Amino acid sequence: MMAARTRFGVTLMEVVIAAAITIIISGGIYGLLSATRHTATLAKARGEVKEMAEIVLRQLEKDIATSRANVSTVGAGPNNAPTVTTEFKAVGGGWTMLVPEGKSWMKVDYQLALPRLTRVASHTSRILCSHLKELKISTLSVEQVAIDLEVELIPEGMKTPVSHRQTLLVTIREAVKYKLDPRWRNNDDVINSY
Image (cartoon, rainbow, N blue to C red; front, side):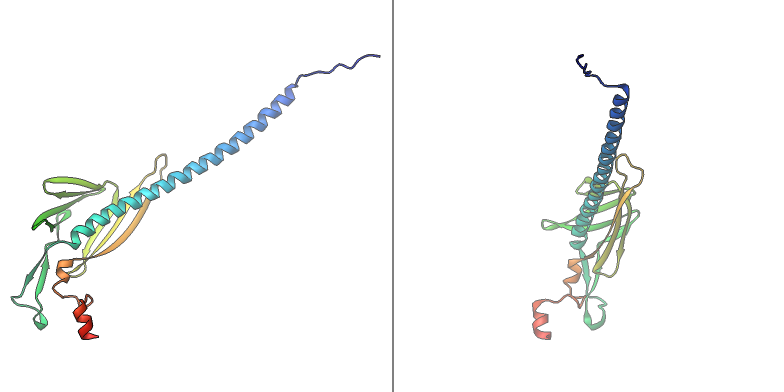
């Protein structure tokens, strides 16, 4: 009897099949990781544009809400209500206002040169945002201002920009304190009128 000979080798066909299976699995893993990275990049960009919009809106709201208003009783309106003019004004490609600084007033200028918005106050300038697509500030009444902005950013490695639009209504507090707006009541008004 002859003993059977065993071989411990692999054929070329087995190597090719193993390589093909490895390439298919590697391609699937690469596609999955690439899609995950794309989704993470988009989520990061969306968070960044929202944060940029929030920073701009918070600073504008703070400055506009506390901006100075001048009151005149000469030639007062109906029912002897004083007339109020605000120091918040559109100038050229930006806006200017007087805001409180200690016991005095400080001039603050906002300079808009899309895509950049710069805040200039006390001889210092600070870029609030360098990715603005649009910024509109509209005076609705003596005491109310609407801010509408859109921030746009192209995520790294992509061609399509991600944008965030937000609108905010700001009330100029000093104009309101002269009781020109009947919607704003103090405690005495509520007790006496209702």
